[in-house]
Length: 143
Image 1: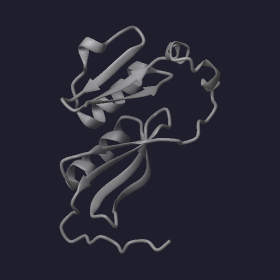
Image 2 (image 1 turned 60 degrees about the horizontal axis):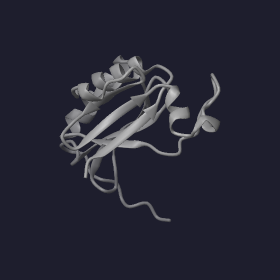
Image 3 (image 1 turned 30 degrees about the vertical axis):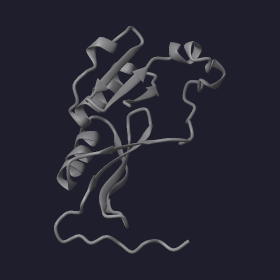
């Protein structure tokens, strides 16, 4: 199985460029269309759809109006090769016009992770298994 994850975007070229700068992934050139661009690895494709996709998918009644802030109902977690890659992705996201929601931190499950938002305010995480030297995982939060 191969996962394809898609974002509905206001500006497909800008979103494609943002994630390409942050992740350094190649384009899925065979998937390119006037309303779609994607990044791809052997395991997944990360796509960016233009507004006409709402109608094509039967979602026209769910298309946000201009300027409307959409709630976070799902987010991608992009697993990177190590804590240094997480830190580099955070810097690349800032340089490419994104913002930090939560800066890199140690999780109770032993990952180094940050929560970011892209230029269209979609939330995503970058994470890596393992912690930087000298950083310990915090205790498991109690319910």
